[in-house]
Amino acid sequence: MKAKVFCCKLNKSAILLVGVIIIQLIFIIIGIKQLREEKNFEQIAKNISIEEKEQPKQEIKQNITKTDKTSKIKLEEYKNIPSEIKGYKVIGKIEIPKIGLSSYILSETNKKSLKVSVTKLYGPEINKQGNFCIAGHNYANMKMFGGIKKLQIDDEIELTDTFDRKVKYKVYETYKTDPKDVGCLNQDTKGERELTLITCTAGAIQRVIVKAIEVYD
Image 1 (cartoon, rainbow, N blue to C red):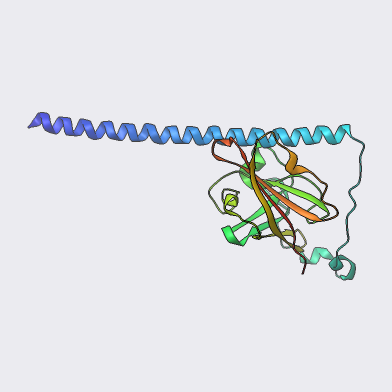
Image 2: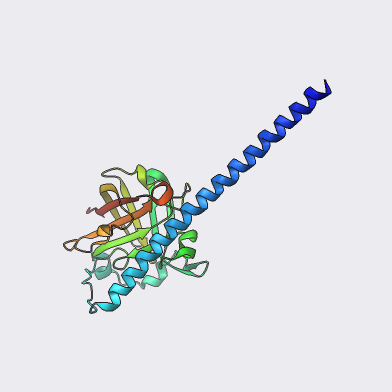
């Protein structure tokens, strides 16, 4: 009888130990995945910085919106977005109603900033002519880009700048690609305002790309 009780206790201990080991392995795998994502995004940001230094500086032509032309009130009076989060400058806010995402956009992409929020990877100023590219971790929460793989054609995305000026975009393409493929950063938008969301698949094996274009009223 005592032997049976001992064996039962031993089995429970073994099961508990196996469970602890499995949980530890899951955390290790998640950690490796996050490091891959961070290195990939950081390397792209570094490459972009090098290219910009090597090429002659060219100013991107910016269209002045009707709101900019007609408004006579100082824009600073409408500023409701925080200027920074954890030491990183905030340049705007992204909202995606379909997946319940609402997150501030940080001005720079590096390992630390990517853990705080989604970040500007490349492109013009927010809501200006060109392809505004945002990078974010594939985290399953309402602040990162874990849910953008659910987006489909015609889903809406909203970008708000630091003066509460909002522009709506509509998804026109979604796809997966190799982490080294930077074609999604292309700035040839034919004068349109476009948006590109970038995250990674599980294990950072591929990139998930969501492209959207401004919706006109």
